[in-house]
View: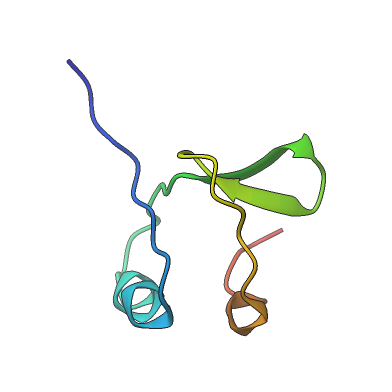
Length: 56
């Protein structure tokens, strides 16, 4: 078996994650189209409030 990557689909969930002191892997990537993010479950990431949260 394996582990599942997190889907942090609300600002409150992201703030909890942001308070962690260590880097954390989440299920969000822009592999298919650069700059257009999707969660591992296929849901598109579309919240401008999260901009600046991720290191580029």
